[in-house]
Length: 80
Image (cartoon, rainbow, N blue to C red):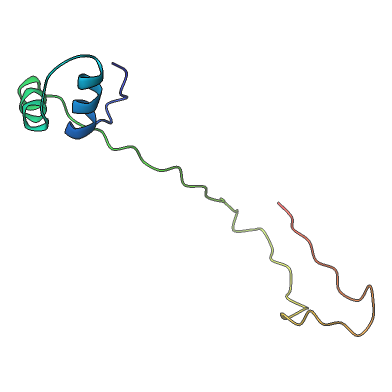
């Protein structure tokens, strides 16, 4: 059974029952404790942006005022 060491006793019980074993949750917990099996929690992927301290920030010239008096007065974009 490929579980990536991430199944707790409830999910382990469901997998074992699907494979034909007649086992309950508490029995699964006891067996895993006897065998010394430990659950490894998966860590959610966290996207971070690493910047150099020397990167300059552009000045905020628009100042959240997006209503312009004429076309082509304010342009905005993203850079990476």
